[in-house]
Amino acid sequence: MSQLIEVKVPDIGDFSEVPVIDVCVKVGDRIEVDDPICTLESDKATMDVPASVAGVVKEVRVKVGDRVSEGSVLVRVEADAAALDEPAAAVNAAAGPALASAAAPAQASMPSVPAGAGLIEVRVPDIGDFSDVPVIDVFVRPGDRVQVDDPLVTLESDKATMDVPSSAAGVVKEVRVKLGDRVSQGSLIVLLEGAPAAVPVAPASAGVDAGRAPAAPAVAPLAAAAALASTAPAEAQSLPPVPPLGSKVHASPSVRAYARELGVDLRKVSPSGPNGRILKADVTAFVKGALSAPPAAPVAAAPALGGGLDLLPWPKVDFAKFGEIEVKPLSRIKKISGQNLARNWVMIPAVTYHEDADITDLEAFRVQLNKENEKGGGAKLTMLAFLVKACVKALQKFPEFNASLDGDNLVLKKYFNIGFAADTPNGLVVPVIKNADQKSVYEIAQESGDLAKQAREGKLKPADMQGACFTISSLGGIGGTYFAPIVNAPEVAILGVNKSAMKPVWDGKQFVPRLILPLSLTADHRVIDGALATRFNVYLAQLLADFRRVVL
Ligand code: CAO
Image 1 (tube, protein in one colour):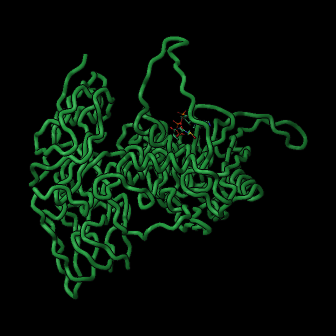
Image 2: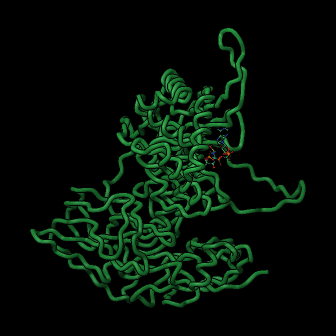
Image 3: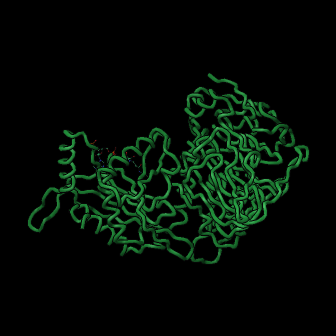
């Protein structure tokens, strides 16, 4: 059963007759909920209109240059029953497009405010129905000079991604938000020093103004921020000089999100859109160029996007020639995690080191504690919780494992946030237990259980999946002996764990049955040599063999 659904321009605040500057779909395209349909640009804001339903585009009702207002039909989509069953689609279909995309007219209702002593406060403008929206990108730091409309931060709710542009020109004196903070309309973002620039108000008829920064909703690649996704883009490690942070880059939120997924620094991309605007095709061309470029001279840190791998094109095979097939689109999480995994696989010279830990006594202890707890109704202790605690102790002893590469520097972290891979119906995600060093095994068991449940229900927030220093990938509940997990950049190591099994172990006189846990530690060889990795593994195995050592 299928159903034709019209995707319309949502509530876009005070704007009407807004020019369409990009149409992102064509008839026959398969779209998912939140895929951008088109980009609109008024004299105050650029906004992507996302799809409120998944399906196949049957008709495109707009073209570049058309002017649209709230309620204008953009496309007609044949939504299949499965798409309508998806929770997001169901919500959007029921609530109408306005819910799928709240417009954020920049500066329309939140101009800059002088804050005394020549300081100007720039606050979050009207962002529609959204509040408590996480900050996922901060583009400026103290000392940066910004112009009117330069993007300051990106906010990402579960329905939309929007850039907040500066409503004044000046020098950034203070940045009042950081990654993961939650903001609402009116929240203070930065304090600027400088005369408030007059906010130019061009009549709508003035048409497209390239000097406007995006400030509206777009696609929400939220769920996937998740899966082994890097919180620091690959650009952090790139070498060529780039314009300073805060330089003006004209791109719609969806193009920014696309660039973030690929780890592309938009400041390096040549724009081909009207008035210097970067289009999605420009980002794709940049990636293709980077991949087909001749290998660069050896460098200290790998440049973004694989350093010009001269790879053969992906084989195109008509599989239907050989038998019946079914084409199934990858889930959003899989698409994004796939890109991250591919980058990490290609860019990190990783080696996996195996070790066996004798957990006979630890498992007996865990079982005993769980029996005692059954009466008291306390949280069930999992092997994962003990592993987290033991890993923290090992990270404290070997700080190079609790680090990230930043060019020629190693950033050593003094906090201990442990990510763990969680298998969900939509793909792999990595929730993070923050400050695990300050938590008991009980607390870690409770928290990892809660996070794993939220992961399976698709309810994790971006902040739940950010800030990990080290990741554990436990397949112990499933089986296996050993495997080679992929390092979750910008971390430098990941621990894989399989199912423990009773094995005969020689004690010097005889073979005795011991419960053995297989460990597989993958480490970035640029940071961690084999000797260090093996010392880490041996120490971790000692901790697990005699857990009393964790408190020493
Ligand atoms: N050895 C033997 N048994 C184990 C074990 C191990 N290493 N780890 C867990 N188990 C047992 C548990 O004790 C539990 O048994 P009971 O039900 O009898 O108590 C059972 O296996 C199921 O455990 P679980 O895996 O559901 O729970 P967990 O807390 O150990 O793990 C989580 C939680 C989120 C890590 C897990 O559910 C998961 O998603 N794992 C998959 C991760 C993954 O896909 N990694 C691959 C990433 S690609 O690199």
